[in-house]
Image 1 (cartoon, rainbow, N blue to C red):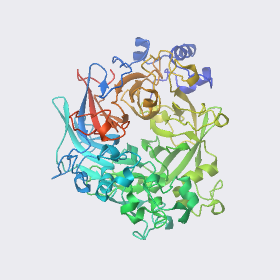
Image 2: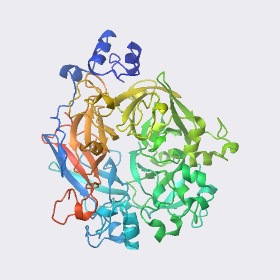
Image 3: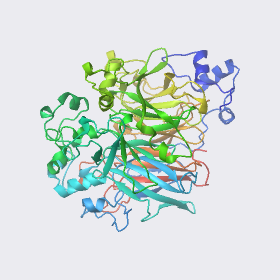
Image 4: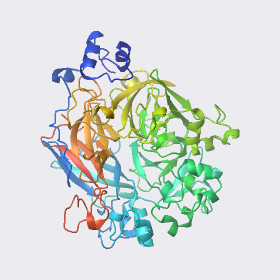
Length: 628
């Protein structure tokens, strides 16, 4: 429980709320003093941020950079052999078979799960990494982003499909350095061709049945695995962020063109998969798309266990799926639908978490209530249940049963009148305060007449972060409550340019501002770490920033890590002791037209090296906690 003398969100809001400003820095201190409250001692002593690292300057070049006093070592790269008998990347001889035994492409979400299961070992564990998508023009010579799908051979297309999905590697820290454990029994690839189960309310539904799977309970493959989460029972939730452009065929000839359109399935067949697999043709296998865009649960401790698509969490372009055990024992999952004007969702399990029964816990995500967020001007957030037969979710409106409500979760959000957001990305509960932070990466399509309190800027090119506050504090927070409070934590952009409308702590330096926030994580002290994806549009590096969420350093970002040219930072993940930070560097050199015109050959820099998405392990040179 937090010290009752520390000012809560509700205390500060009661002291003086302004929709047009953020109560941070000196204003927060003044408010606290006026309430007779104290700030955390570490923050009060510093007069600002508790993060003590020397801030990076706005550097952007062919390699990565980390704050002085830290090491950022390459841990694992695309193409590294991780399975028994696998060979390392041979740029001239890539194949589906070789890629299936190698670490996947474009790493995104990173989860660290200690070994043994149930421990908090911070020196030995399993690294579970999403591999979101592939860049054929940076894998194979002689093609560009525009013509790759037509130029790729069937073997190259098959290799691409094996390059995405999820990679699991055992990692160990020895003498202060991290390394993968080659050919570990835990090392594993889950790809676009892996068989997996479908569970929950929509399993077996007619809209999931295909000619290859008339039961509607077994799917082939996963893809576009963006962010994710780790469950309290030690499994990983890998999020499928909308596979719409991986299908070909004519959507107008499908059984439900309107549903395909609402989920952006247009037959574009970006990777040419429909050329080699008929099930990826919308007009020939119309239900196949409905078997994607789910949250996939993976047990990294059980390599022989099939992944499971959990339909109770709804179908959408999932960015993340982060878990918290509510004070009543139920499990709550927060997830965002990462597209323009889409929604924020929450799942609350019917059953309760039992630390002594892992097998039972692994069924918790099959039964519960999915709801969608509605934000109002007065600072109230209401969760609207997606329950068949209620509030317009009826057969007359296209929802025959609860399964269809979940399969058509976007349409259900439309009917319920949920708040249309600026591309919801990561949504994470702070393990110290209980407050929940929701990232809106940007929305250039929002017009002036569409602005609302939770999305306060038209043509939002910069993004923002909301703070959602359930009743209670810390571990006593009620994440299952029907209503929360909320406010804006920060508005990204360059504060030196007033027309951008950026709002941070007044002490933010010229290096601390950023654009396009994406993934976030919290260190053991409850400080937020923000990864960006799209700052390169403003000629600055994407990277990682740390900030306090309380006290004088609240919403005061400090620049910690810079990505190389063309890359974004993804999936920050801490070890339990806070002394290692794993970070994915995705799509280096993606600003290049082709392999003949590379902006960087990161991380190897050989004369013929391919750019290789990689995970870095960041440690402090004195062995201390990340951030200080």
